[in-house]
Length: 242
Image 1 (tube, rainbow, N blue to C red):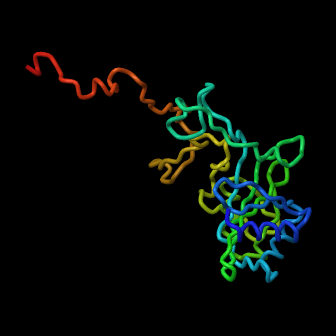
Image 2 (cartoon, one colour; image 1 turned 45 degrees about the vertical axis):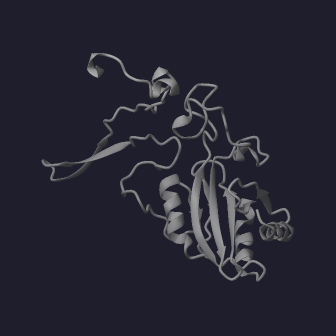
């Protein structure tokens, strides 16, 4: 991370002492965790005060930290990355962020905000944890950034996060009769219902899903004599080769 961002991080930490905590970022983005009770206060100041002037909310998204860092294969040689998970040395993430709050009960749902200051040409990422329990809940920032309207509706639709104070919190991407929230880690891959057209009733009907759940294991290329470099270009013998 460059010096300008480090200076920005120091000033933000000093300005919001006790309200924010710096979060390590492996991609070099400046990230702070905000206490849920201080979310609106911090966001309002970041938008209005001349030192920050983060006038644009670029994105808002939900995160489900259930099963964070866990692998679906019961093996000591699995990693959390791609199709090589069955072969490489484990490379798990650092400490589970849901355990960094000091609470005995791990947190599950969080909301992440990506902010932009056009005036200062700076970007900032904030994360806040939803209130525990079901449904997860956090304050809406729509009165600070109007762009949060559809972003918060999307997070509500896909994660089931309620945004306190949102004037029109409805599903945005799924159907009105959709059951569940598809971006939750415990949502079945095949869904809960399937849709078909019923020619007798003359309309679309919902039925329990008929697809049986199963786990697909990606193909892994194993070392054997077909891949030996010494044999790759060796002359072939046999009747078909003369």
